[in-house]
Amino acid sequence: MIRFAEAKQRVLDSIVPLDEEERVPCTQARGRVLARAIHAPHPVPNHDNSGMDGFAVRLADLSPEAETRLTVVADLPAGSRLTKPLQAGEAVRIMTGAPIPPG
Image (cartoon, rainbow, N blue to C red; front, side, top):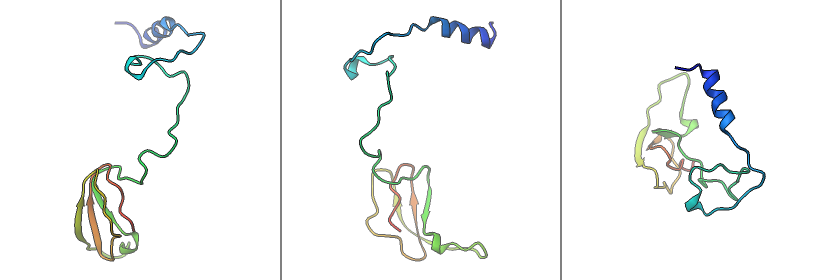
């Protein structure tokens, strides 16, 4: 077994920089590296979304001094949208990637 530093150096020694950029179709781009960063013309996704499974609640309904009980009024899987804002005392079970409901 070789040491990490030697393995790293072997990889770096095997890199051959290109003098110029080339354009290839996406279907032929596998295994290649971008010559420069690309940026989406608009946010992707185009909404605030849940980073993990959990519950969407209204901050105004939470109290640091007392227990908070909310009624779960909907399940929100990724790909679906809640059209009405949460009302006082309501929560929504929300899955990773789902849009955060209004309110």
